[in-house]
Length: 344
Image (tube, rainbow, N blue to C red; front, side, top):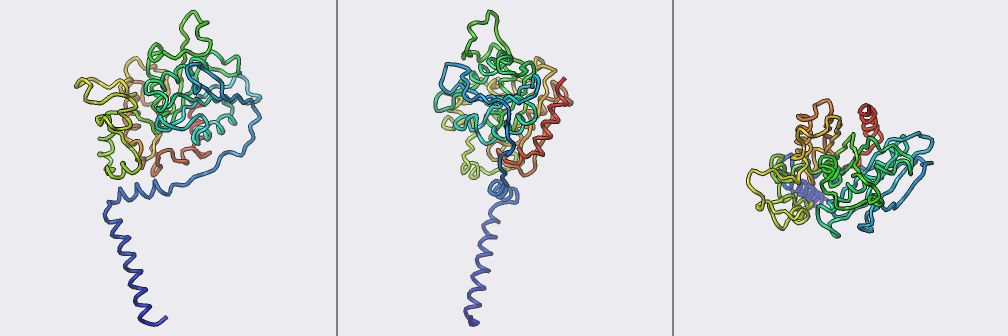
């Protein structure tokens, strides 16, 4: 290569580097880190352990919809196994009981002595809120009375949900049994007294907790609006055209000023919250779908009413929304240990 071509090539490389650095300079370090961590987070595979227990797929817990089904996994040679119930995420619009995150959970816990049930519920394309919550509560009542039939202990249920499922898990735990009770479970008409369920452990993974504060939370975390628009996070309840407002059918301006929004789990925590409830909440610091301040605020509110000893909040540095690293064997072992400590 002659000297002239070498000079041209060197200038081209330098120019490319300068353009790259100029592009990065348009963002502050926080924004740059958000982009990098959300674009390049590691993934891992599913368990290769064989499950020797019983599997029941597509169990119809209600005839209200063809989508009111659940899957059950009962471990072998475990007497009276504790029950963990899983609620998948997906923005209330997609995914099912076999979602990636639900699969990580049921594969681990069914192989560690738990009976596990993964729920399906009506998605937003079929019915808007509160259909999904009514479905979840119907499934929990169904599970609470069918332990003997399938072979598990439903006295102290551990309820897990991620993202939209985290919201539903929190609401199912915090709302009274007689609220959102319009979906009957299969066989409910045979009971002369109301059937209820009891949640001992709530596991909320990066779920919405305070719908009104989503936009302000992102601002406080200095997440730019243009980045949120790219990833589809339309968390502005005050915008009638937002996905969130449409799903909840609740423009913010229609709410009386000063009135707490009872669609938000954080506003359901009060002196009536059971003191025997134990809560595990986790969130990723670079989540640009649901701001991590949602989980921090929820954990703080729970601590005020049921005590700090009953609440565990884990902020995972540089984890994105629904990050696979939440579901490594190491992290799930920590959750299993926490559950063991919190069962009486």
